[in-house]
Length: 332
Ligand SMILES: Nc1ncnc2c1ncn2[C@@H]1O[C@H](COP(=O)(O)OP(=O)(O)OP(=O)(O)O)[C@@H](O)[C@H]1O
Ligand SMILES: [Mg+2]
Image (cartoon, rainbow, N blue to C red; front, side, top):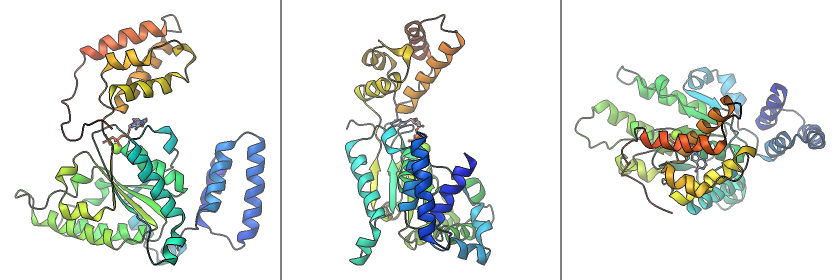
């Protein structure tokens, strides 16, 4: 599989002298992969081939400034697909629009307008913000980079800004999704009396960098606390997508999906389980399913799925639950 990964990134990078020859080779590999039922690889290769080549990646290498910027991000191979996620209608539509604008950017540019590329994802924990960002990178067949705050935030005056500059200098050379998780940690209300001048300078500098990013860099920022964001920060984002906590009915749909892949879960009643589970997020429902699976595996099928579910529901009712996140819990 390592070779397959290398091939996908080679195709993505567009590093080749003869594009037509590469196209022919990739098409024959796609056909071969399809004939062996390796449909995922075939699909990823096809999309990597269709995606526009990475801009001047080699230039940054020649300039030798890539290492400093590279250390400030963490690359995740995008595997999650949008179809894996249960999303509100609005989020689905925003995703379709973003993907279309990015894929047909040349049409927009021919009319003198750039595709949107600055997206804010907000909502309570565990409802798909990170997964969504990864799935967008997967759909666009471009790399998914997560900003490493541990490497970015410096303790000396001006240090963070110097690193931010390196990060953005590097990122500008690559068509990618750049993900800022827990963005409220950096983009907080600047009017806060407790904040120092240094934080204000970092936020201002960050906004300036975001403003100057080319539109082939899709910047996504996630927050559980959208209301803490400075209005100037808020304004930068062209799409602001909400990931609300799921309703009981939506958790039932989620459980139904998970159970449909389990032989032993046949006959389970997702609606009843969702009612008793009272999960506050998809992540909580996922945890529950995985726990049931673990118990079932370790019982060597001696305990029925139904009994394990019953016991785990009991345990989850007894366990400590977090306070309801009052910020954005609403139905969709
Ligand atoms: N909308 C969803 N549909 C399907 N599965 C979901 C959804 N949201 C979350 N999950 C499941 O829960 C896990 C955690 O979700 P994710 O990390 O994307 O949440 P998040 O919103 O980024 O949370 P946090 O605010 O804590 O970072 C995912 O790996 C996924 O399996
Ligand atoms: Mg997250």
